Length: 419
View 1 (cartoon, rainbow, N blue to C red):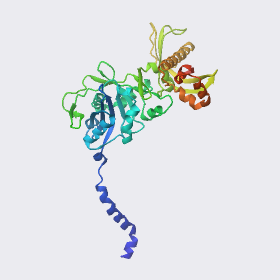
View 2 (view 1 turned 120 degrees about the vertical axis):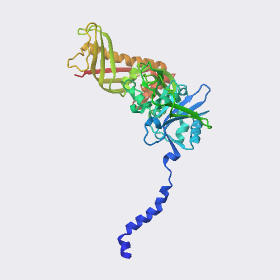
View 3 (view 1 turned 30 degrees about the vertical axis):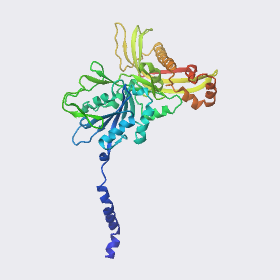
View 4 (view 1 turned 180 degrees about the vertical axis):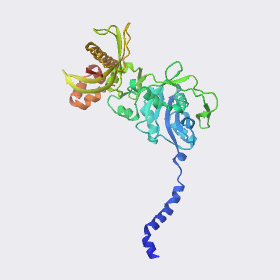
């Protein structure tokens, strides 16, 4: 017996540990029994000052698609935290935001300090830094219901719609990390993309659901829910559209609404998309006559430096870009070019492109200066690289925000053509 014990000592220890530890694992409840997994959060502020908090969650079911598992639930109260807690009490579970992909505000809610609005919720539940932020001129709750009604074979959701406009909207990746980085920066200025519900006559993602509709109900706790079921679809003749509208936020509060075109200069300098379109209208030289020319940047590299010149702060931007002519239209000679080996980029056309880009950047600078919106991050740049001189310069201003009208912007465009 002793020899058997010596030879199988490890086996006996393993069996004893197994009997001691296994019973406790049988009694551990699954995460879904104690937590509701939230994948989307919506916040609506009513005219009466009430907050409607909506959550988009997935209820796991076997052999079912994404759409049939999605459920939208909302609760209304005086504050966001009360509405959030009301939803938690309604389900008897803790709301887990670790998988939350987006936070959606209606436009009235952005007129409040959104960091202060979200702070009570974030103190109770972890939220990923990659969680996206955007706003809508409509009801956040309604937009979330429409997004969950999209047929799942297309795999569309609200975060995909933000990426849909990414190539012409530099702000399509506004997340919590960028929000807090801006909030604690000196300029405290950023933008949030805006998505809207429109009729089918406009471009967007079709939300019509031909196979199922939505049913809704209410609970005693004051919350309402919506999930897939029978009946007529509430999303009929509706599309969810992202046409590039943006909300400029300062001090985490709405400053104004703008279009992507009004911020084209910011897109040239900070935009993450490599492909940007350039349109030259009614252009003439020795080769062209009253031509409309479309070009696209295939690559773009931006470098910058800051310095003082004649006691004035200077932001010096150099943009190196490779461009491809996509189409040429001129009277009596339409030409469609998508990949040509002939060099249609004449010297005068290159100069027109440079002037076009510089004009767009300067127009954006003038617009932002009038709005006291530092989206070029002038304060941050000089405070980091020219701290002493920048402090002396600010001391000479009666209004600290006047630095936006005092700095000089220099832009150099280096242009190459793709063959």
